[in-house]
Image (cartoon, rainbow, N blue to C red; front, top):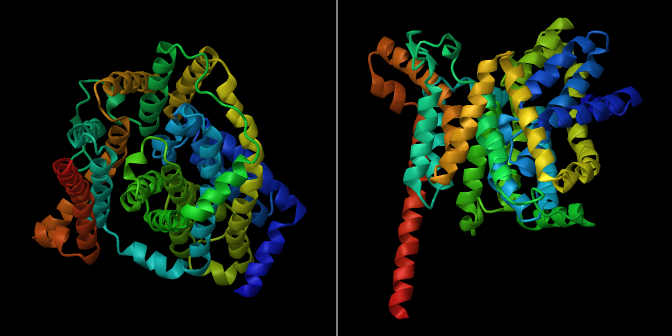
Length: 505
């Protein structure tokens, strides 16, 4: 293995491969930062180009685009409150408040360093623990996926501590919206109101663009602010953030990276689930929970470390079992098959140089991403110095283009505008857009696996046995109960402590 790893590093630093790493990163970051252009789209567009390349060079470039795009989504999430990719939804919770406080550079650098750290940790798991983690992923069936989604939804209680009821209502409304379309079990139409265009359901990306981006345009236009936020370039911002993370965020980085890697190996789970769960856990274990949602750098770190760690995680079942853990992993698997290479355990024996070169290149990619990102941040942050009127027009244009390109449908543009209005007016009455987004994202996954579990229960003759007797399901149920009860118990504890303090006064 050591010889193969060294060969992988040697191949990564071959001039042409190293140039492909830099080009792939820059292209991926730009794709990720543009709302509506996903990592899957970026990687898929470049797959045909790899047919004329050496397979190792082609895979290295695709890996760089993948890593760059997942990180790139945080740039727009932080600067204009618009997650460039669904994986960056949780980044908006604290990244945007940091920008409004004039600390955009701090948020952008924290995102960069956390992304690189999470990417390296996820790749190390892929390099050394691929086989056992792939076997663990096989133990997840429909009931386990259902409880994983319920655990993710339980974080709503922690996301909106000031008004849990409104948070739960927001999440419930998001889940209700996610049921539009065809029933996953019977195939019957639901809530389409006779409109054929709604049969496919509500596409997640236009809904996210509307909730976070279009609604923000309305806020910007209605404000008297000439610029989005006050921003002045600060020398040494990157070093200051790096020192802060080394001093106080080591546990957060490691915990979030491990969560991201684990979620990444589960097919269909995705970076959005990893980011939200990691954000919730970071808040749970932080001493200053009240700072989350108000510009806590810990929130940005948790989300970005987790969603980048899913990259290595998603490639574990793809390379070892031939089961892609994400849409991008499926595209990369297609590229391998096009080159006549069959993913599976035998790839480490029959194509060891290619497999290890690809994996090791991801470590190099994440290290190089720090240097590329630091230079790009200096330019991207200057968007805050552009007048609000120009930024508003640009965001609207990108929102329309991004929504339309998903399915080439004008209906998705209308969906985006509708959710923009929902996000704007809902925010004015206290509804939480983050909780609603969580419901829209996790709703279809939870329902689909609930339907499968019920079918399985019908075959086995026991609903209780299917849902409540599997070890992983029981663990997730316990974690869900802890997640729901912790905010309530902490609120009672604080109220009791304040009452005692008032009595003494």
